[in-house]
Length: 138
Image 1 (spheres, rainbow, N blue to C red):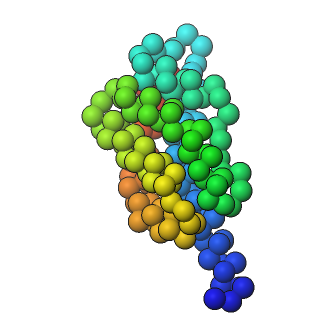
Image 2 (image 1 turned 45 degrees about the horizontal axis):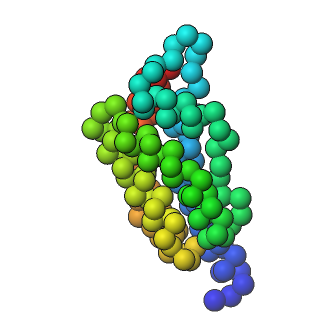
């Protein structure tokens, strides 16, 4: 493979990773509570806990960076999954947890990119449902 093709391939993989990271993190941005409107459900507490901490993203274009990113954010998603307010939200969060665990298991960026491409449509469809559940906390 030529150097140009490798660079183009890496760029596509990086863009795919950024899209998936955005799909995972954008719903969390609506989780900023309004004064006096905080729900005290376990799910909302998990969401607010997530919102209080810096939302990490992969820092470099490497499999090690993705592994570190997953290690940092996976506990938040597992807690939100365990306390989901309804079956649809639990299903969406279960899918996200599964994807994050897959990220942690891949050993090459090309395989990770292929996995992301195969699941992009599901991310897009589930993002709105998750955002509604999070918005209900505020």
